[in-house]
Length: 391
Image (cartoon, rainbow, N blue to C red):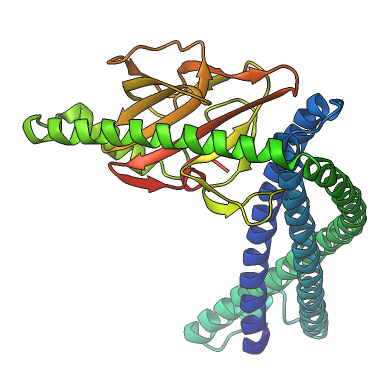
């Protein structure tokens, strides 16, 4: 191989490695998106038969639209990456084929050389006809090098042929996947169009119930204010205790463990979708109305168990009007808050393990909805739960 081709080969192989890694990451993200879409579809089936659609139903539809758009975007990125990989591999194969042609030409020259010098190439005649020992030694070394070089050339030809075959198979596989992805994209675009119409229809239905929705917003606002007060009181109590209490090894281990698992903490339920995100955002129906969320709202199955996302100590269980019961768990320097629960299974002061059930989501049978709120704090700083729990 010449130096120019080796340089091109290195660049192409490096870029193909990156492309393969990126395609794999996109496939993993698509799998997570499709899983959440399936879960949200199951939740919708439980509510869409109701005469009056709920805000939760609309929120799930809105989340599905976001997921569907993300899915189409990821499919398009996969298509572009596959096209680029096919192009790069085609260049690579052309280089290998040129190299194979050169190897075969060189090997043919070796065979012709051996045939022309067949009488002299008899190892014994060739060596013992030498004028002296040094010439015999040089001839023997030449013969050995000749054999090794010819063997090396033969192996390079075989290996290059195998490489070309492998690369051609991969290109064929990529072309098939590309065709599949293009079909999937068209399907998802049609699904998106259908869901956008369903969302618009549900939105119109809810807009006719503006007065009722404003009451729901006010009720939630009061409930969240009461929850904020309970959290503030707990943080103040814990701050006072920390002045006199020594942070022992257990406290430090739990705190470090929680921090070290950022982005990898388990979901508090086996199934569910986020229907209201962290921070302040517009109400999905009421114009000019802002909703502030110190955590995330998760819609899940009726009577679903809620689990602690990390080991810690239950510090408070408080009744919140409009949010039923809230459980506050301390994890070293961190707190997690789970509200709108019923059938609490833990006690204040109890140490819980990661993924230990702490209660059930309050479920409304009529609209078929079960939504709870998850918050994460570091002392008195509010954190976005989506940055901490698994995607």
